[in-house]
Each structure stands twice: as C-alpha cells, then as structure tokens.
Length: 273
Ligand SMILES: NC(=O)C1=CN([C@@H]2O[C@H](COP(=O)(O)OP(=O)(O)OC[C@H]3O[C@@H](n4cnc5c(N)ncnc54)[C@H](O)[C@@H]3O)[C@@H](O)[C@H]2O)C=CC1
Ligand SMILES: O=C(O)[C@@H]1CCC=N1
Image 1 (cartoon, helix red, strand yellow):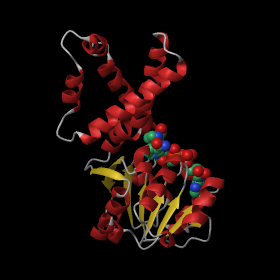
Image 2: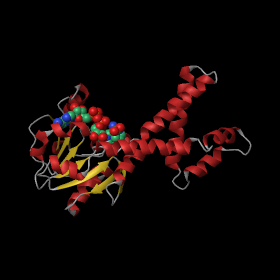
Image 3: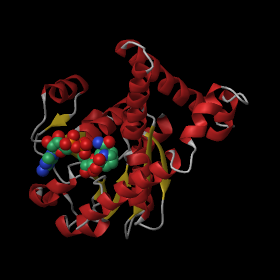
C-alpha cells in the first residue's frame, strides 16, 4: 500500500499492546509500516509481543521520545495511572486515543501537553485488515495529522469521521463491540444445533463456517444489502421463513439488538470522566 505508507508518521509510539493495540500493531506491520519508526510500550508485554518485536524490528519498552503520533490503547480505567505517558505528548504530538468512553477532554486532562487529539473507536478485525473505526477530530488537528490518522487507521480497514463526539459512543456500541455480538451468534447457533441433536463439534463447525461464509459473502457483495442477501436465502413458505418469523417477531432480534446497543452506549458514557 504505497499511498498509505507514504503518509505514515515518521515516529509512532503505541502505548498498550493488548488485544486491540496488538491487533492494530499487526495491521500496521502488514500494511508496510517501517518498524524502525515504531516504539511499543507495554509493561505487561508477553513472550509473543517480544518475539514479534525481535522478528520485525520495532522497539519494545525501550526509551521512547515524544513521537509524531502517540496511539493510546490502554484500558480506560488505566488512564489515571498512566502518568508516564504524559511526557510523550508534546505540542507536536498527535494523540490517537481508542479508549472506550473517554472523551477528548478526558484525554487532554491527563495528557495536557498534547498538540491535537483524535478519538478513535476501532474494532478487533483490524488485525486482519478488515477493521472499522469511528473517528472524531479534536481541536487544532492539522491536515498532515489528519492524513497520518487516516494512514494508520486506513491500514487496518475502513473508517468514518463523525462530527458529534457523542456519536463515538454509538460507534462503540455498534462496530467497536459488534464483533463480539457476531461471535456470540456463532456460539448461540452452535448451541441450537446441539439442541437439535448435532454433536457439539459438528454443531460448532457448522455455526462457525456459517458465520464465516455469510460474512465473506456480505464482503464480496458490495452491490447488495444485507436484506437482499437474506431474501436470497429465504424461500417463500420454506425453512428460513419459519426461523425468521421467530427472529423478526415484535420481541425478536431487532429490539434485542437495540437494547444491547443501548446498554453498550450507557456503559461507554459511564466510563467517561
Ligand atoms: N478489545 C477490543 O475489541 C477493543 C478495545 N478498545 C479499547 O482499547 C483499549 C484496550 O483494550 P484491550 O486491548 O481490549 O485491553 P487489554 O487489557 O488487552 O490491553 C491493554 C494493554 O495496556 C497495557 N497497559 C496498561 N497500562 C499501561 C501503561 N501505562 N502504558 C502502556 N501500556 C499499558 C496492558 O499491559 C495491556 O497489555 C481499551 O481502552 C478499550 O476500550 C476499543 C475498541 C475495541
Ligand atoms: O468492551 C469494551 O469496553 C471494548 C470497547 C469496544 C470493544 N471492547
């Protein structure tokens, strides 16, 4: 991806390389980020991360100077204790925070030196280049910083800028947390298969392959809506229609999905501060 690589920042620090930071890290390396420009800080770095650092050649827990971009990928609850990170955020530094619930103002309070802050909400498929990220620009974001943000986030998948920062909590509820809902659907389908008499391993394989295949078909059918794809599975008076009658009942999946998303948003709002 040369166009993207051209806009990667000259220096990047990733603070927190757990599940999500690690997923983004892998997305960047696969997209051609120069490991010599990257420093990763994580006090709990495990053997996997250490061998990735040795293999790819980025710095892990070395001395880090204030970078052009600092990606904050620690837990929201860890922000108050992360005082050492404040020294890395200078007026030349763009901070990209992926912390659920934490507002731009919350981050600015802890990293007051930061030149500009982008609030981002990515998701786990970033590790395979198929992530989706919501972005909100903080005050004073320069055109170069915007390009650096889009290069880094674009290297992990798609993105959408929002104007109203409160909508990042909605992004969190839909695409940030969303992969877990889909994985849970695979779990539920497997359990339903077991209840119908399939052995647990066969039920698990059928459910997993169905979610994988449906996702891939959706991915490869940009010209079709999910509803159109659903209709192409549904024969009138057939088996799918019988199941959808249950899923689409007044107390079916749609109100349930809405309640789940509302719960996620409420939790994001409660993490603010
Ligand atoms: N897991 C997910 O799918 C998503 C997570 N997020 C956000 O990403 C952030 C990280 O979440 P996860 O990766 O799931 O958590 P995690 O617990 O797997 O990773 C957090 C990492 O931060 C490290 N850490 C803690 N204090 C640190 C410090 N002072 N300096 C450097 N590293 C430090 C921890 O050792 C840990 O490896 C959270 O704020 C979460 O809201 C956002 C979108 C999706
Ligand atoms: O569960 C969480 O709080 C994080 C944010 C979105 C996905 N995982």
